[in-house]
Image (cartoon, rainbow, N blue to C red; front, side):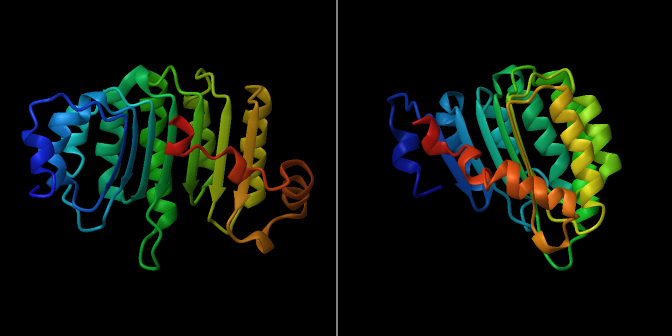
Length: 224
């Protein structure tokens, strides 16, 4: 807070459009009260030791975000992540979510819970969403249920990275079918462990995608 005190004390309105939050998010409360209403592009990296209310100030003050990127999402972060997306509502156009990856963390459980809770939130509150980038450990059943929830959203770009080593071809079929039915302009499916990929999926990645993922990822500089 001391670092930001001169900005907080400045009587002039600070119209900061892009913001990265890394560390203990509760420390940014006063700063977010000052600049949050103007933030359109927001990147957040959560920490495993953050309190369950880490996103409280972000939810309260950052309500006009167009681009939202959140990484290191753990199970207990999911309700607040969904609450933040709900509070942003139709302002949100670009969403990128990445779960927490660690040796002692049940990635498939976190991912499935996130998909389960995220689907209804996006369906009911994110009508303007056109870009979705997810880095998860995918259970095809939960992914199909999620896609059923968001089928009425007019997505233009769908980027999926799957760190799970089972049923990667099944997940691919589910996603590819959705992308074709929804006539999505850019669909990319990547597997973290390339050598465990079913031949069909490997051929698609090699011949159709041709390493398109890095070129399609949106970052804050793309909006400035």
